Amino acid sequence: MIAKINFVPGDIIRVYEKIKEGEKSRIQVFEGTVLGIKGRAENKTFMIRKVVGDVAVEKIWPIMSPNIEKVVVKEHSRKRVRRAKLYYLRNKIQ
Image 1 (cartoon, rainbow, N blue to C red):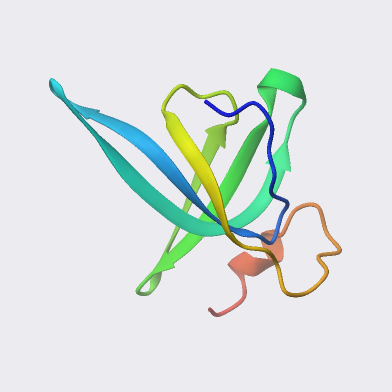
Image 2 (image 1 turned 135 degrees about the vertical axis):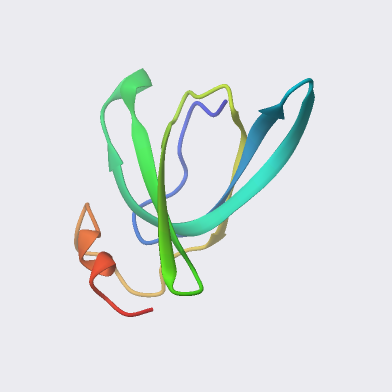
């Protein structure tokens, strides 16, 4: 569970998510570009997009989710991002 976010749209981040399968529990890493942050206070969510082969995967997590172990900023955006939501990346070929 993270209380404050230290990333902005356009950053590449890694989300370490707890996955429970039966009685076992493991950590799964999801790495991608932050498309947007939505909401206020404890209702805040963030959306990440990654491309695997030819398929794009987008996931949305609440900031205060107990399933998030940690969030690591891998790389800040090289360019200055001028939009709050980067939905135009869906149409871009990556």
